View 1 (tube, one colour):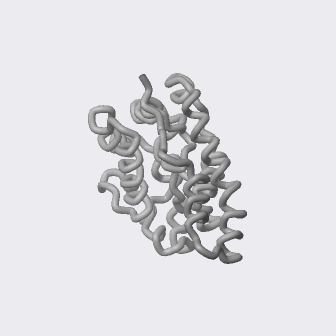
View 2 (view 1 turned 180 degrees about the horizontal axis):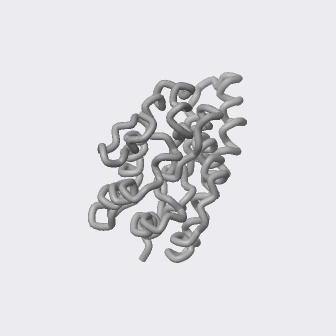
View 3 (view 1 turned 90 degrees about the vertical axis):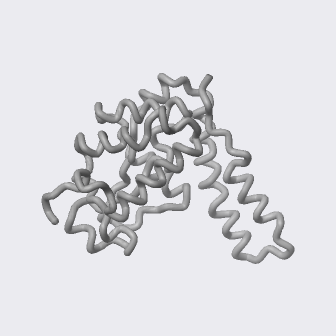
Length: 193
């Protein structure tokens, strides 16, 4: 049986609970509800759709960079600069990512879930235009190589990752490492530094 993402509450439900516990909601509280509610609702629907998908459908779902970027925005992480790209940590098309892609499918996570995404500068010269937390990030155009996927296969595999929470934590760790540039030395490309 497929273990699916089953949050105790959807993001919309959590938003409503946070709103409902306020004694006297302010205008800003109402605006937050009005603004975030529709965004969270679309993200919740995207994640709930995974419950009705087979492992094969999850494994073969096409990665769409625009959809991942929209889901990142819906999760409260908009594009930080026009000079960055939305990177799918686990690739949707690279042949060497098939094992890690299988772990995502096995645990019921879609390829364009925002947990599988991060914003990276396009290339070396774009890093200076990034917010502080991305100034040392691995450039997006330099990361898609075999050593990156070898590393991912070590970090995210079915022997180590057996629950959705463990998968999310592993993806979060990879994301922080990519955004900070603190990846293993053989992962960071040598050109351009």
